[in-house]
Image (tube, rainbow, N blue to C red; front, side, top):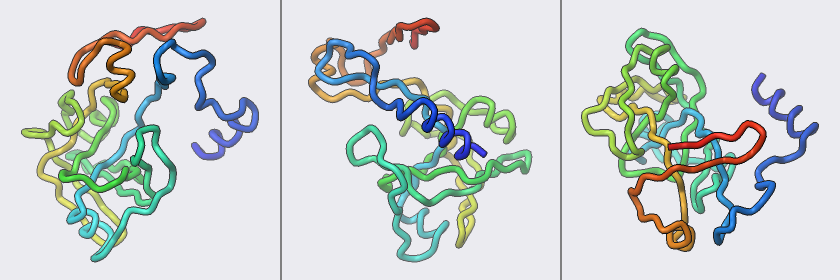
Length: 179
């Protein structure tokens, strides 16, 4: 259903990945909402999809070298409820992490800590089911803090450094400020 709706919107409105106006920096800043997703280690990828499994590219992400893979897993929480087909992002990382929304956490029965991606110490776990196996993740489930991906030229232009907090104002008929 989501794909049919997405296809209809793209056919009516066209591809909306390019900004309508440039923000004055070296590169256009694109604002997106990150859907629920999973990052996995190679070891956990093989648990879920079998020995020798590799992530296969489904769609490029905005960050160079990052991609949404064709592989998905079913995520199960403490209420034994499941969110099916959660996309795995590549490439493989040195940790496994599940990023969910606040309401996903309520549905699954997981109290999600708000964290920067990669900061998953002392976080809840979950179960992930792949096509070839089941992973009992002891920790690594978070709600990701809002964040901005910028290259060094953009960092210099906006006079910010990695780890700084900022306010990002989006103008328009229904503008919003992200803290």
